[in-house]
Length: 125
Image (spheres, helix red, strand yellow):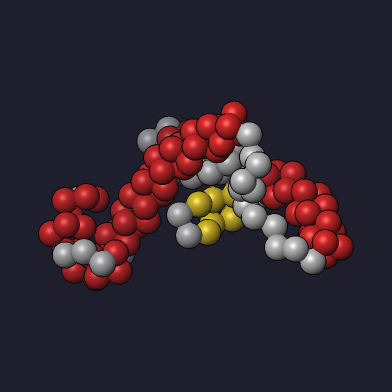
């Protein structure tokens, strides 16, 4: 087998935000249904710090999407959510594939997802 094929990772995970593959970032952090790379975290740190400082001064809880958010922004957010659903589906498939490689039963996977083993197999098998 050629060395390039042998060294290629079995699965390539991507940041849920910028979509960079794990091979192009230093760290890829896993959360429930999402992955975030070190570069996206670095972009978020100043934003969170700024919002936290403003919130501490105002004592008023901040809404994720305030009522006065523009329609254009809401449309953009909606489009991002749609792409996130596809990425989550891919991530769930990867997790199920790994679990099956570890010989975890369809019944156990289905139980964790709140569905029958048949439903889990139909969706991910």
